[in-house]
Image 1 (tube, rainbow, N blue to C red):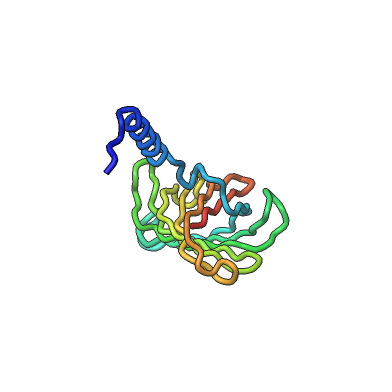
Image 2: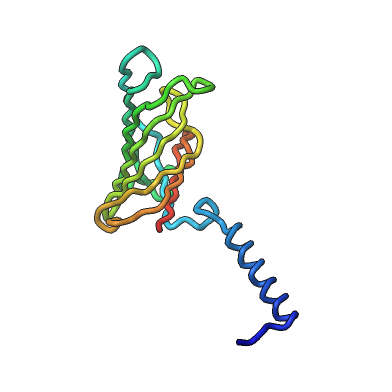
Length: 163
C-alpha cells in the first residue's frame, strides 16, 4: 500500500472539495437548457362552481387553447387543462388547484400534473412547475419537468426538461 505524501494529500483534498462544491451547487431544471419550448395561446375557460358561490373545494375549471412554436404563432396543436380546487380561502383569496395538463402536438401527446396556487376564476399568472407523467407517440415514456411561465394577455411559454 502506498502512502500519499503531504502535497498529494493536499491536492486530493482540494479536488474532493471542488467536486463536492460542484455537486452541491449544480444547476437544476430551471437553470438547464430546455429540451423543448412551445407557446400556449390565451385559454378559453369554463368554470363549474360547485358548493357555495365563489371559490370552494370541488370547483372545476377546464381550459383549452392553441399550441405554437413561437409567441402568437400558427397553431401546431392544442392544450387542455382540467383543474379541481382542492383548497380554498388561502391568504390573499387564493386557492390550490390540482391540475392535469394535456398537450397534443405533432407526433403525439404529453401529459403533466401539478398542484398550483392561483387566484379564483382566472388563469394562473405566476410560473408553475409540472411533473411530466408520460406521453404517446414520439413522446411515449417521457418524464421530467415542465415549467409554465404563467399566462399574460398574449399567452404563455412552456419549457420541457426531459429525463
